[in-house]
Image 1 (cartoon, one colour):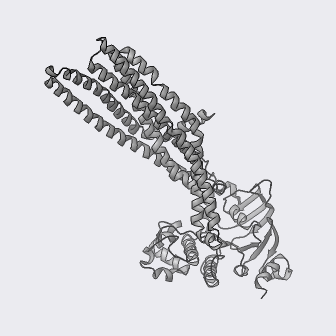
Image 2 (cartoon, helix red, strand yellow; image 1 turned 90 degrees about the horizontal axis):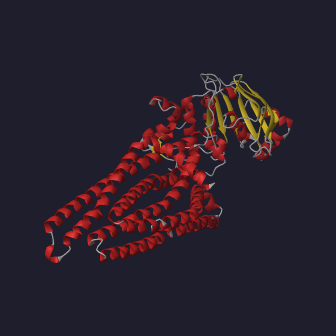
Image 3 (cartoon, helix red, strand yellow; image 1 turned 180 degrees about the vertical axis):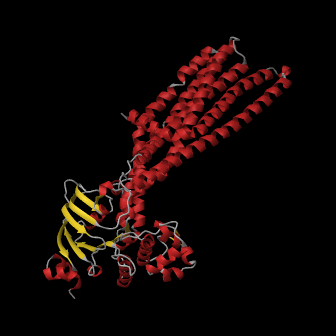
Length: 581
C-alpha cells in the first residue's frame, strides 16, 4: 500500500518535471560523462604505479604522460560535475516553481469550504517549506542515483577485465549495503511522513501566535501559548529525531560493509600477486575500483533519506495543487440588483441544519439590514448571496435568473463588499484603492478617495497616493475601512454588502463609514443601489428600507425600524438592550 502511494506521488511529480526535461537530460548526460571520466582514473593510476615499480628502472617519461592524462581526467570530471549540478538545480527549482504556483493557484481557486476547513498555517507550510523539500530530494537525488548506477556498472565491467574473481567477490558482497539501507529506509518512511506533518502543525501554531499576539498578551495566555507550542515542538522533535536516527544508521552500516569488501579485495589481490597473476598496478587499480564501486552505494543510501523526505513533502503540495477548483460555469451577464430567495435551505453540517425554507424578495435599490444574535446565520446569508457557498435546497435568483445559471465571477463582480476585518496589502495607497480596477486613472482613484472621505488622510501621508502602506503600518481600522469603501466607489457595482464593518471602530469613525456607505447606496446623481448591512450596532441600520431579524437561520421579524419597535418583539428587545439609557 505504501509503495503504491509512493509510486503515485512520483508519477504525479513527473508531470512537473516533464516540461523541464531538457535540463534533466542534460544533467544525466553530464553525469554519464563525469562518471565515465572517473572510471579511467584508477586505470591511469595503476599504469603509473607499474611505471614506478623498481627504483632503478622508473619510466619517468611514460609516468609523466599518465600524470598529465590524470590531470585532464580530473579537470573533465570537475567541469562536467559542475554542469551536472547547474542543470539539476535548474530543473529542480523550475519544478518547484511550477508546483508552488499550482498549489497557490489551487488554493485561491478552491471552494471556500476547503480553505475554511484547513489550517491556514499548514497551507502556507505546504507552499513554502514542503516545496523546497522537493528540490533537495527528488530531482537532484535522482541525478545522484543515476550517476551512481553508471559508476557501479562501469566499475564492475573494468574490474572483470582485470580479475573476474575479485570482481565477483566485490559484486556479491557490496550489495549487502543496499539491502541494509533498504530495510532501514523502509522502516523510517513513516517517521519522515510524520515529521512533515508535524512541521506543518508547528508552522500553523507559530502563525496563530504571531497573528494573535495582542490577544494572547491581553488575556495572559502567553504561558499556555508557550505550552501548546512546546507540545507541538516536542512532537516535531520526537518524529524528527526518529527519522534522523533511523536514517543515520544507513551510512555507518554501509561503510562497515564496504570496509569489509575492501579488505577481502586486498587479501585476494595479494594472493594473486604472490602467484604472479597480477601486477602491483593491477592491485592498485582493483582496490581503487573496489572503493569506487562502494562509494556510489553510500551516496545512493544517503540520498534515500532525502528522497523519503521529499516524497512526503511532494505528496502534501501535490494534494493541494490537485484540489478541484470551484466551478465557474454559467452565463456572464450584467446584473442590476433584483434579488430573490425562494424556499432556500443551507447547512455547513448535515447533522446541524442552519437556514431552512428562507424566502426573501429584495427589489433593486432596497437597503436591507440583517440583525440578530451571534450564530443566527447573518454572515451565512451573505456567503450564499456572494456564491461562496451554494444552497442545499431552494434558489437564489438575481434579476429573475437562478444564480446557479450565472458564473460566480459574474455574481461577485456585481457586489461591493466591506468586511469586519478589512485587508490592506503591501503597495501604494493608489494600488490599494485600485485593487478592483487596476487600470483606473489617477483622477478616478482620487475621486473615489474623496467620495469615501479619505482624501484628507491620504494627502497628509509622506508621498500622498504614492506612499507604500502595509497592514501593520499603523493605519487605523477606520482608515482601512474607508480605503475599502473607496475601492467600491471606484468599481461602482450595483449591489453592496457591509458585513460588521463598523464593529471594530470608534463611534466618530463609524459615522464617517456609515455616511460613505450611504453615499454609495443612495448617490445624489444616480440610481439607488441594492445594499445589505449586517450589524450588531443597531444605530447603523435605523435608516434601512427593511430590517430582517434572524434567529437560528430563520427570519423571525421584518419591517422598518419604527414598525419593528411598535411590534415590541425581538428587534425591540435588541434595540432597547443597546439604547435603554
